[in-house]
Amino acid sequence: MDELDQLFDRLSRSRFRSRFRLSDKDRAYAAAKGRAVINDHALDFVRARLAPAEPKNDGKQTPMRGHPVFTAQHATATCCRGCLMKWHGIAEHRPVDEREVAYIVEVLDRWIVSQMKKGAR
Image (cartoon, rainbow, N blue to C red; front, side, top):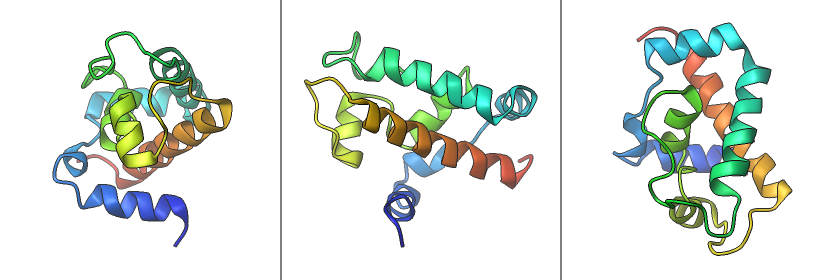
């Protein structure tokens, strides 16, 4: 079992994290835009909202809905610096480096792809 398999196993056992699903609207948006565009959006969101050492409104910077990436961030505990520390070991109070940004986007991509494969609810 690789690192991401272990992470997703742990996330599946969290009552809070495991309740998140892509809405029909988010699923349609993701399908229309395609994986590459959604990953570009994820990269932009992570760099702007999570990567700074002291993000604006940390703990409240990620909306609960409105974009597939936002839902994925809550489902994967990549929504704020506290969750990044608790679930992913990415330290708070320092900038997130590009390797970590790429890891976060990979986590988000994996979750969204898994949701898209499940089909309509």
